[in-house]
Image (tube, rainbow, N blue to C red):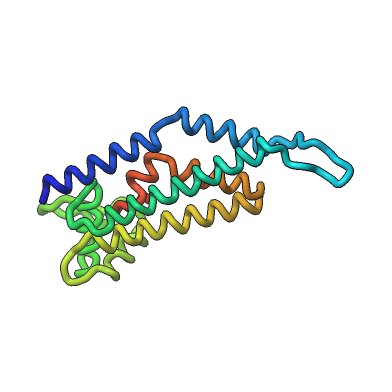
Length: 193
């Protein structure tokens, strides 16, 4: 089981590196965004007319945003259900939530092992302790992190849409969802997500 978990994690990391770690792809998306938002459309008697190249650039940005969102959702689906720790910080977070659930302090230094301590704000840990079942599980924390990242993506896209229009929102969503850190750490049980 541990071997299959390692293979899933390695395949996810390789997929993330292959699909998102390419800075040339991000540079290309940036150039597409600048080109699409540049206001030099031909003026006709009826108003402005979009050039065919601008339509192509918007289509590329739409495809990139949809592709990045699909990759992020697949990564969330793969990670949320795994029973094992995938990153060093997950064990500490689940331990702190377990202590908080049982009324133990998470901020006072303890002279006896384990010497884990909480140095983050307690909202995530408190919410995790409320949702945690009788036995600790990574499911609840990863689900909270995944949903939180989706809310941030949607909120950022809505804000960019209001500020700069559809092209800006698509470019922002593409940049955020195709970022290796968001893809790798987004669905994990980490308080800094």
